[in-house]
Length: 575
Image (cartoon, rainbow, N blue to C red):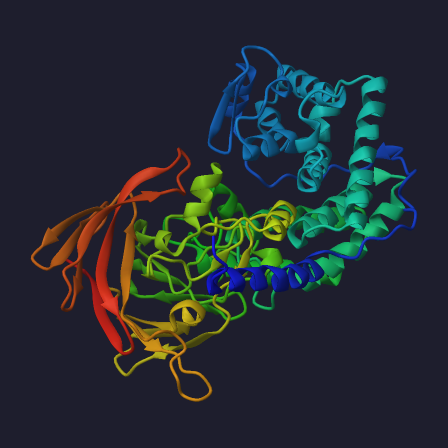
């Protein structure tokens, strides 16, 4: 292969980003001996509440040897699940995280307690994939789960098991301390800080662990939770899971008669309203930046803490989301944010200026969402084409490090991918946003991003206008050429093939009506219309379903764009 300009640009990109990303991602490791290295808990004082809902019917499946995690199932035939190779990485992380113990607790029987104890005993005996089990994020989840479910595991246990259980708590704590000293990615650091703080509160003799955990927790919450309550990753799913840990942690401080850190109180208060911004009428969160299927019961549990009558934010400028509401339950949730910093972007998508439209409990326009498992599908779900926005030249508005670069395998890129995962190394950095209302009372939102400027020299603009009665959503897409300091075009100036996509929820059926598209679902029908372009109905896939990927459809506008191209479209409620 020749050393063309594209290849040289990629080498420079990887070399530059490597230093910047690694410097920003990891806390400096230290060779000083840890004060926690020889620390052992002497007993358990409290068991924190687990806010994740439990299901006794899942306990019945576990009794029968059926373990279903992350969209994959394994039938053990009476053997221990730790004797099998995990069917996927996500499945294995769920198994070794032990969060599923809560379902056994829901059964409230001597059999469920004995089963839980046997599973924990199998793991403590050294069975299973120890490499996967020792991943820092998995260790942190296991530590939180074991502490939360300690009443289930320890009721009726003998002294020897109790001491072995305490040793397991100590091993998890020391493993997290070592991982923190070696350096961890930000999301893992925050979860590790939460787990260490839990351990310090729940265990006798762990006062140094509590001090270290509280210090880390204050630092990471201050760094990672944005002023409007979002997490720096922009991942709604991570924010939801974090809140499910932070709320019981706050209560655990109060149970020990210890004042919670101010950063913890502030984070909880800011994060709850943001979840309301992202929540649709069917009680699920919008599918943005790594969000998959929503456990509606968990979300409902969280929002109780925010007050039943609390109102959502309408604009989260730091997190990059906005909400438009109309009468009749019509709702638009839009992604108007820049790409997160590389160290936080392992699941973020190239969906800038994408949106989701719902009316009451009826989801209409969606993004494809993140699947629970399957690395190839997860990569596909992050592309611009998997979002309801404009895709230019069949490329994404973000550059993903893990996606293959034609004819090039850069060793530094491979190292970064192994160390940090499939991060974004370049994406929209400047997103200008305007919002307000017009003289007719309609809600208006406009934004533009520069994700395609480095490669194609075009900015994408989008404007939404939702009428007050909720019966009409008008949209405009525009494309503007970028010019350099001397007024010269940044790109070639040649026309670019584009596809403006509107992915439909699987419950919606689309059919052509003249030059429009009729949308029928569980609620009132809608009509999609566009000026001067014939819309096409194509196949799509909805990844964010509990039962795996589902076939669906999408409305696609195929066109060629250049400087000044404008497209007007609208969704009209019928009846």
